Length: 169
Image 1 (cartoon, rainbow, N blue to C red):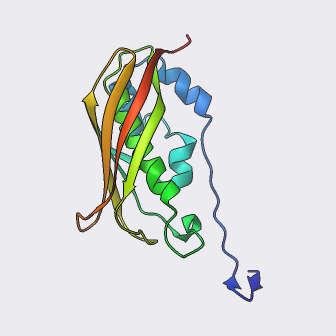
Image 2: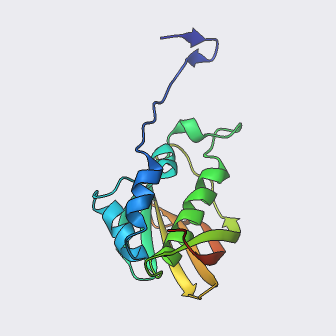
């Protein structure tokens, strides 16, 4: 193992499945069924979830729960988990809460997300993120999300707006 004046060099290997093949199957399902297939392991998670260590643990109409225990590979320069990971976690649960309400053939994309960070996160902190639909819509949907640590303390909260659209067949 290579070493520098800062200690041993660490590495992380990430592998994933073809996201377009999984998305093609998802096109045949309602949003909630697509998400449930991922949660049940019938469809692979999207590469971003694998890269960031997100796990989809619960799916209900209008509500999803993800977990994540970040490691130090996502540290910022001051030695805490980068806010971008927490923001991505919130963007994911907010978007998937919207997805859970969509019929087959419809998708979404984030238009806007506002995140409030309330406490620092360190490697090994077990996080649970919940996304809930606030107002579904045919063209625009609104959702909110929160991230809590293992003690139930609020780490960050977000509100999100998603554009809803027909997916290409």
